[in-house]
Image (cartoon, rainbow, N blue to C red; front, side, top):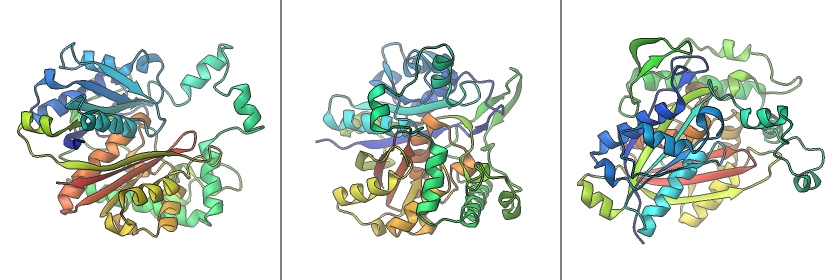
Length: 392
């Protein structure tokens, strides 16, 4: 079987809700990343055989196959198809897996895996709220309700359950959130994100365009203090999580170009990384966010590796308890985790986060001269994807 290689990565800097990317239609934002991947790799646009794009809230401006719409808004020819993926927060990580599987099978030689989410223009929960309001029903079927009687699936509840089950205090969560900001601040100031970020014009929600370019993740609180984070009110009375220890609502797009050996030969470029392992696992949908722990353990076993063999990890910071429980259970080295900060500081643009994290991971491996990187993230419904890459 052929190998799958990443030859180009790209992401926009994150935008806060109502912030510097709010004026961008998500289709056009995704197209900016697609065009950047073509430019950075030097690939003939017509040689791209598919665009697989993750997006969670596929309604409104993100409806009607947002992937194909992004192709039509980009510089790719009409001959390039596109398909949209929803594996909740792991949507674009799954897009990467599908792209890798396509080139490894030999059915395609060059595929773009990407993701987009405008949480300003298509707010979270819109796909559920609009139909319910119109009397068109809810996603939970009678069979699901019989299997999980009285359960209201909630990521917020899941985060609190993990904090309690793993003995994670509010103080520990606050300190972790502060560290996420501290690392993101350092990475931003040191230019660690320079090669991965695609500069795009600042477009505010009122449609105004300043002519300035957006190149710095808007969610980073450069004046963050531990005292300030600790002072944020609890999400739930008697709980441990706050908005400061949760991922930030974010607008953004990201992507990677994946090719096999034939694609490499045609491009004549050196690959950035090789896909070493990829898997996905289902877990308890009630606690929901715990899945990265068993999924990582299984992935390492299938890959014949130990956690000590992995040089850097990207574990999505949906809520601070998730990476902390992951570290605790796997005995992983905290110094290798989310070395440039995570979603608590940088934002979590839902469907775009998978290839966003992979973009950061591949670049961090290169900057630090490291070999193996692992990415995983919790996903709605109690699932987790795991991807292990080898820097080349």
